[in-house]
Amino acid sequence: MDRLRLDLAHPLRSFGLELALDVGGEAVALAGPSGAGKTSVLRAVAGLLRPERGRVVLGAEVWLDTDRGVDLAPEDRSVGLVFQDHALFPHLTVAENVGFSGRARVEELLQRFRIAHLAGARPTELSGGERQRVALARSLARDPKVLLLDEPTASLDAHTRAAVRLELRDLLHEIDIPTLLVTHDFEDAAALAARVGVLVDGRLVQIGSPTDLVRAPADPFVASFTGGNLLAGRARRGDGGLTEVALDAGGLLFSTDAIDGRVGAVVHPWEVSVAREMPADSALNHVTAPIAALVPTGNRVRVRVGPLTAEVTAASVERLGLRPGEIVIATFKATATRLVPLA
Amino acid sequence: MRRPFEVTLWVACGATLLFLVLPLAAIFLRIPPVELFRQLGDEAAVDAIVVSLKTSAIAHVVILVVGTPAAYLLATRRFRGRSTVLTLIELPLVLPPAVAGLALLATFGQRGLLGDTLDALGVQVSFTQVAVVLAVIFVASPFYLRQAIAAFEAVDPHLTDASRTLGVGPFGTFRRVALPLARGGLGAGSTLAFARGLGEFGATIMFAGSLQGLTQTLPLMIYAQLDQDFDVALAVGALLVVMSFVILLVAKLSRPWTGSVSILLTRSDRSASS
Image (tube, rainbow over all chains, first blue to last red; front, side):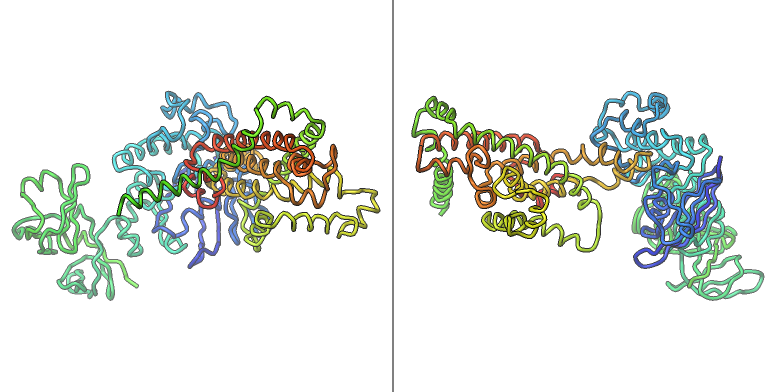
């Protein structure tokens, strides 16, 4: 296995993309808002976009070195690129798509991706999940040394997404090559990648394990991206290691993070509990507000209470008889409240 | 109010159809079909058929072989002056044929731009079969180019990108992805260009003349026979009507997704068919 090293600089519409990465036999997710330059990174590695300045090196092979005038054509770089829209050839069958690169492993790949029964079908006859499997099989037919996945689950419906995510995770565990995947979905990033790099306006604001990102978000975008609540306010360190945050929207919060000034308080939905009466427990933070919405996600329900989102089990919603409009108390602990500096 | 309006629509439609179809029918109605067919055996008619088919075929091969890669480049690259190039390519479509003939004479004629050069090489272009081929290419190629550019533009760039990342070079990608996906549009453009070339009259008569057996194509032959043998002219006319009908049919069948007579409106139906 060869390591993929890249160092890119390329002007995009309203900012410059600048990124350096070193990827071994692991999957690294590039996450960030749309238009942050994530797809440009994949295109530059594949050779479909020539960056203004940069280097892309795989092991000892130099794919791109703008200083030395090296720029290998896409067909000369050993990459597998799975496009967001899959880009299956509509005039070819599934088997012809998978065999497009001319390698003779078509049968084996069709079996492995459970699409052998679709060998003679046209891409338009396939479901989203099937198209995804065909695109993956096709990209691996070349035995690439680098795998690039652009928004692998974005074009799928919620139900298929969960299944495809599991399949992808198993696949990425199996193949031992540098993999870059672009996503705007933290659950994808967390499920598929060992490391997640967050790209905002062309720059890597943080890179780390998914849990690192959740535990210590470096930036408000990272906090909201990982799914946490983000409440803006002004922090003032108080006695006993407790920081007091006066929220912009009114009210007080407590956190064990020692920081002063403008902050965003980050709380994860699963750290927030919902009750009808003020609980007599150790939690310091309480928000009393009407329920704005109840959104089921799987066996859990996201309950929107004022500025907060709480995630509770469907059984709890049932037991408490929660309905939109009812006033409830959302509670979370000061130790579960992260404070990140705001610009 | 509704009835008179309805009646007006039907009357207008009937009048249109009558006006367009009656002259074509007249060609076939003046003399019986068997006699019409026999007139095609006329020596001048046979010569004209040979000249027309030969020059059209050569011109068409040139249009396809040169026009297809040119159209692919114009469809897939963005460069300064691209829209100017596209406009220049379409100019012969609206140019009066007499001007086209004049332009060709001014370029390849004895006193033309390249006249001295061609003279020095001992090449005579005007009033030869080469002139017929050049005239046909000049007036017919824009029909193909326009359709071909539109057809290649409609090929999703992600598909050609995917082909490249699968290890297939630019030419392989053109041959295995772009060409098959643009096939419908290329076929329609090719048929239209062939039809336009077969009917070429104005530029040819000015640039190539109307010499029987050499430069006299079918349309020129009709014109020449008007004063001599009207029945032969009718027979050749009937032949061209049948050929045109077949060409139109082929064009429509090669693009089954176009619902109406819109093969000329590539620009607007591109988005609908992509």
